[in-house]
Amino acid sequence: MYMLIFKFVIYVSSYHLLLPLILAIKCIFSEVILTLGSSRTVSEFLFAAKEKKRSFRVFVAEGAPRYQGHLLAKELVARGLQTTLITDSAVFAMISRVNMVIVGAHAVMANGGVIAPVGMNLVALAAQKHAVPFVVLAGSHKLCPLYPHNPEVLLNELRSPSELLDFGEFSDCMDFGSGSGSPLLHVVNPAFDYVPPKLVSLFITDAGGHNPSYMYRLIADYYSADDLVVQRRAIAGN
Amino acid sequence: MWHRSASFILDKNQNDTVYPADSVTLTPPPPSSISTPQNPNPNLNRNMSMSAYYQTRAAHHGVVTSDWLAQSQEAATRAVVTGGQEIVDGGKSGRAFSVIDEFNNWRKQPDLAEAVAAIRALAAVIRNSEAKTMMELEIELKKASDSLKSWDTTSISLTAGCDLFMRYVTRTSALEYEDFNSARSRLIERAEKFGEISYKARKIIAMLSQDFIFDGCTILVHGFSRVVMEVLKMAAQNKKLFRVLCTEGRPDRSGLRLANELAKLDVPVKLLIDSAVAYTMDEVDMVFVGADGVVESGGIINMMGTYQIALVAHSMNKPVYVAAESYKFARLYPLDQKDMGPALRPIDFGVPIPSKVEVETSARDYTPPQYLTLLFTDLGVLTPSVVSDELIQLYL
Image 1 (tube, rainbow over the protein chains, first blue to last red):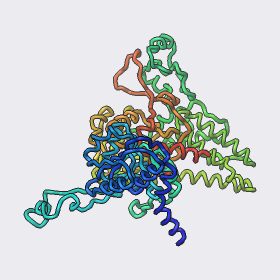
Image 2: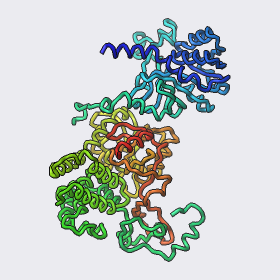
Image 3: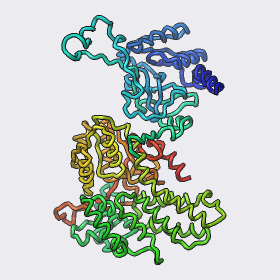
Image 4: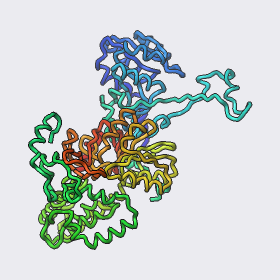
């Protein structure tokens, strides 16, 4: 039992090394790559591609409100990659100059949809509009057997408004205590976005590159149908 | 059959001399008769080549009360032999036990799916058979299955159900028994179990789809499907707040029955005429349809109008969910609408139509997989691309 857990931990911490070995050989020749936020998989992938002497430039969208893109930009520069940092709103403006979009994922759903850091849907839509391939890098531990019945809410979390607004500036508008009943200002700060399968061109997993419509097969490798049919006997009155 | 170009002018000249046959035909009618003019004369109506499958559905789904249905059922089972002869043109077997009669018996129950009725009929064949060896039994079963299939060539679930059962019978595991009688009783037991699947399948499908119905959603439903009814019933029992927009479903008008049933469950229902679907599509959150058959491409064959609704939903980015049991999976691959055997049913317009005017009487259409979002089956939730995989597993 412990051996299994141990092996799994090793796998999780090093799987992102496997990905680039298999696939950094792909298609990156004097290209411009766009990514959003910071994903360890993507950065390992880009480092490996750099080592294989590919020449390319990277556009990094900063990924508000956490601005993880700033960290990624720093790392890429440290490795000698030509990097351009842009805001999320500028993605649509810059996408016509991009050859490929490569992003990581938080989870991959059974229908091939992706739960990714907020702002990803924006990038995916822009990529589709300009016919830019949208490639998602995901290890098999990101595969989820659920279907997104309510994609905005499923697996999402609403984070603190303090990431958007400074404490003190807006505390009057948002205060439940002062004045009348409920405050007029609500701040919604979702952590994740849902990208539907039709916007994804390719999934790169440690089992190879696949279509979104093929993901159910990989999921079936790890999950059995018995795991999924929820026997809610109490409610259904069976 | 291919009325695509102006050749219909030429075809019409050829067909002017051909009139619909007086008797009910069991094999698909020859291509020329499809384009012949429809006479609204009621006598001719009854004799027109109408798909028996849709006759059953009409009988099941007519807007009737359940009392009337119970009475007519009783009357029908008493007069089953003569009733059967009226609809079917000549029985298929000369033996004392007729599988067609048995099938008709089971079919009369409104809650039972056709495929399951067929399997129960085949189980009865096993029970009444006098075969002494497995091969003999198999041959009898094959004959019975063929006669059932030819009784109504247009019903996909019937064909699929018979095929699935025959595949099970010919699999080696059932034949491993030394003793013929125990093998036979095992087959019968399995057939009975298959029959329970109909009820269970609907429950599983309803359970799987509960997550997709959220509070405050608007669901568009086309016509009447027992599986979809089960889904909505379970959602209502789980105290979900939703409302249903229901198309009328001409010419069956089965949507009226659905509206009836839903009103009993206190679910807000709104009836639409079939043409009002695009008009109301923007306030719809999802479309739920049943299926007569699920084909290899992942598309579905369903009541006429489903393709239209799927097209409109797709253009407005609304998900289309299909609820279908696994025995409806068929080994067909239609390339276009006219590729399947025609299933015709007469349409009553209420006013006499001049004989020069043709009427499109096809009762079903094919919806390609790119317009469908998900299929809920008793094998789980599937995307259309998974269907062919599942088909292979079922039929292997």
